[in-house]
Every structure is written in structure tokens, then in C-alpha cells.
Image (cartoon, rainbow, N blue to C red; front, side, top):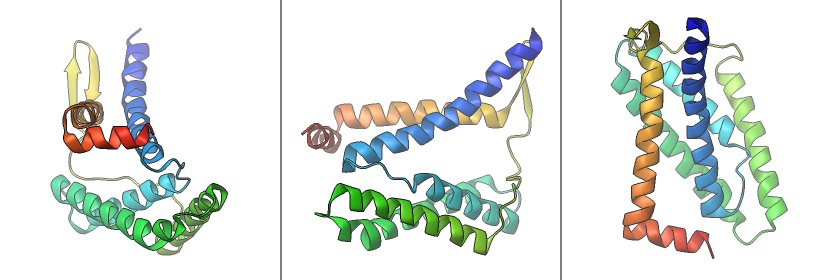
Length: 174
């Protein structure tokens, strides 16, 4: 029974990661009306950048997270300005094909820069085990679940109460 409880908690943590990715898909789709088929590759590239930062500056999780966030923002802005903005007014099929092509380019560039093998992202935190009753939960699992809950709350509050969020909801429902 204890093993089942451990697996359920682990599944909830993995589900929280998928929930964060799904929030990204939903936000992009509602804002643009398109599914970005390169989103997984963009996430992968950000993870490799975080892994590189963690290797260069071991034991500093805040620097790794900050560097990965800055890199992902720069990547997203560059893709929007250089690739997606010129596609405005083009047929939906052409824009979808551009995101598929972008996915291929990002995957190939990642393989050229790094390698295809799985790597452990060691940021010096998250390995500690917190005991809840007889169940041991890693702090990284608790952090992922907390991050999902914070993101859900922040997005809900932003789109519900802020003027910009309300305007974005109005435009998306048009």
C-alpha cells in the first residue's frame, strides 16, 4: 500500500509538469489561434540551457532558474519577431507548417550543440526527502506541485482581475 501511495505522489508531480506545459499550449492557442508545434522543442532547448548553466555554476538553483527564464524569454521573443510575425496574414496551414519546420530546426540545432542522451539536471537542491507520514516525498516534487498551483492562481488572478487580462480574454473569445 505504501508503494502505491509513493507512486500516486510521483504521478501527481509528473502530472503537474504536464499541467504547466498544457497551460503553455492553451495560452498560446488562445492568444494566436494556432497550435505551436515547436513548443516542446522550445522547452527542450530551455532545459539544455539550464543544464549548461547548472554545469557552469554548480549549486546555485536561483541562477539556473533565472538564466533559463531569461534564455526562454529571449528565444520566444526572437521566434515571434523573426519567424512568426512575418507569417501574419498568411493561411493557417502555412503558419502551422512553419511551427513544424521550426520544431525540426530547433531539434537539429540542439543535437548539434549538445547530444541526444538524457542528462541529470543537478542544481544542488530538490533531492532532500520530506516525510509525510510514512511516505517520503522529494522536495523537487513538492516544488513542481507548488509551482503549478502558483501559476494557476497567478493566471486566474491576472485574467480575472487585471485590465490587460480582461482585454486578452475578450480578444481571445472574439
